[in-house]
Length: 144
Image (tube, rainbow, N blue to C red; front, side, top):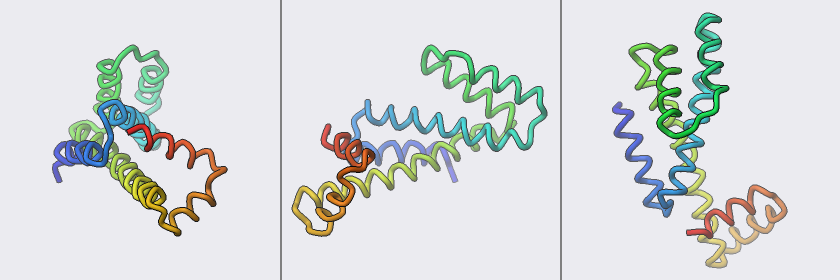
């Protein structure tokens, strides 16, 4: 599978359901965070202490911009996965994006049904009205 093409397709699917570039960039930032977490967790079991210390030192530094973040991400994957670095990075990113896209589609569908007065959707939303996550999702979807 071509992970880079899948990555681009996933980004387009977010746009297709109404995510503007700002929201998409927020999702991508979260995907990078999750990717780093997955890689560090995975690599902590397989790398020697010195390489892990180098990675930990880079992660703890202040990251001034996206270019620096990309360089750090690439460094982590190159040290950890060698020639499979790019494939593994996209694999982790795409995994997060697929899961998040599914949640976004489900949330959007629920909100659309809720706004149309669908009794099941109304009951579901009302049952979760006091849930802070529900309020955040509603706010986020209504910003379109």
